Length: 155
Image (cartoon, rainbow, N blue to C red; front, side, top):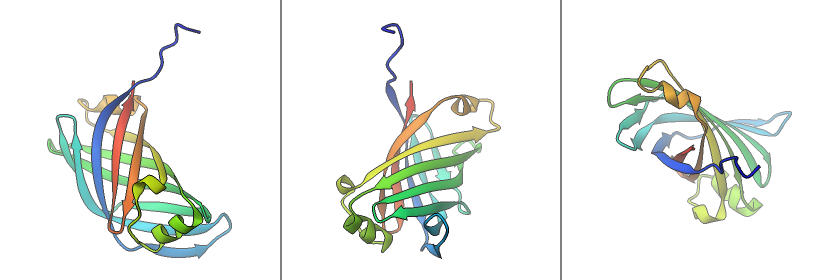
């Protein structure tokens, strides 16, 4: 077993995703359902840049007072014109008081929130096809009008 490699992380990109006001679906069968429209954003990768195209959304399920499951889907356009589909699943946990502040759209210290994500990427670009063949993880912070994330390739 000592011959198995221990995974390492390599910085992949920093994202800023601008979001609109939540669409509150309400208390559904599995929890409180919300949809957060994505307005756009910026990506700074290692040697590349992109923009987040408007039109995606973050489909949220508030499972209980301290846990939210997130499923964001959106498209990036690289500075070279390539499109990348992103599906980013995340878990966000905090004390019920902190989670209530986040849900109300207030600013919260990111150190008080466990926000981890597992983005997956798909693209038709031959040059970027490798991103569909790797695992990525990330960390994030929710601000009133945006989500900031740092994503890493798992080596």
